[in-house]
Amino acid sequence: MEEPDVLKDEPKYRIRATHTADTITVYQAYRPEIGLPAARDGRFPEAWKRDRMTWIKPSFLWMMYRCGWGTKEGQESVLAVEITREGFDWALRNACLSSYRPGLHTDRASWQRQLKHSPARVQWDPERDLRLQPLPYRSLQLGLAGEAAHRYADEWITAITDATPLARQIHGLVREGQLAAAERLLPTASPYPAGDELLGALLG
Image 1 (cartoon, rainbow, N blue to C red):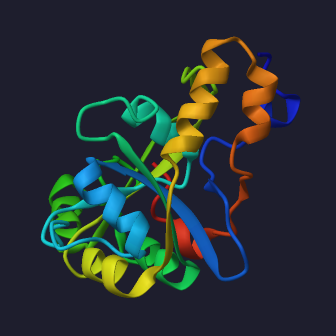
Image 2 (cartoon, rainbow, N blue to C red):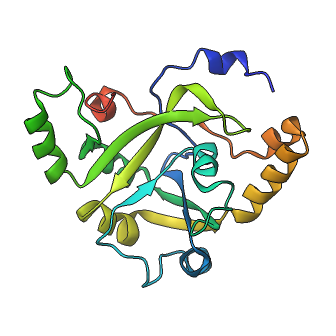
């Protein structure tokens, strides 16, 4: 499928997501023992550990790349997690880039100190197309630990939906070469309003 002209003009760094005036949808994938009760109850079960870093992805297709359309072991249950924009923005304001960038950080030692004390971290990886091939612009991954992980699980979540059937349906169409039909099923995403105030120190 030829890349639409509008995507060719995309900036290298931009958050693209499904969002409303109050919420943003992010994606994760877990083993069914966690994913199924999370979708059923709208919150993570006791087996979900708040003391571990958890990574959330606003990009559906990057999540599909990461979990292999929900086929990778331990990632069979794909979740669409709707969280408050207030919480998501808080995480960005308190985040640090996951890797050192000369020129952006004063020196490696100061970056390491910032990383150690930040409850969130950001990395930018190539966005993916329907065939999960890399695109020439980046997709945000947001890692949450400590206070951020607790806030995510206990305060920010407004809904959790099992996106596994959707992932399998789209994957089936892609395998059949029906890319136009697959694209029509993709969650609608648009640029998330995050200016320099949120991303100024996070553009690697």
